[in-house]
Length: 239
Image (tube, rainbow, N blue to C red):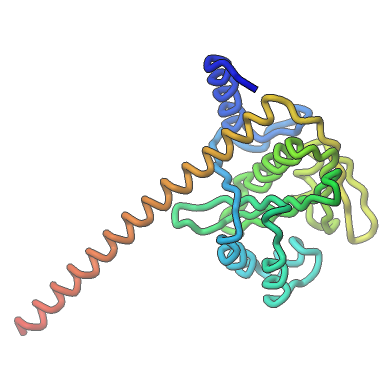
């Protein structure tokens, strides 16, 4: 489909503005974040090690909420090894040190009629709405993949995850210690497809800039270490 350059620019700007808006429900519910750009990057197989490091850093309580059971290091390693990057979507948010501080897994069901969402956020990065941002990103990708329903399996005590699902308009069912949230997704449209393109480009650009900045900082740290070594050597030789 050919798109006039003027129309493409207008839609791209609109999609970009949408990612700068506060997080709200799909039905226009109350915002949960101040306007802020949160670059989210799709992760491939070569980032499996970083995903593992992020999950292993979770406390026992956080692992329990994320997986629904007290996952051991070995169980988390097996989960990470079985991630299917060709079938599913894995998203991450990086800090300036290129550490994954939030990871989401969008797992497609058979035929992609439904998809399941799971997310984890590092303790030091909580309270910034990253879980809601990742949920919103997963919703967009699921819509564009033709998914009609997004499902969240969570423990009833996982109030943060259930709150995100409710604010998006999901129907939540509780059964003892477990809960399930079902969110019916609208079909993909032109804005959702362009929004995905823009979001992917923003995430990739953000990662490249952070990687270059980290490389520059590493070089400066190396130069500083050399200078300190030279000064230390001069001091010792002058004694």
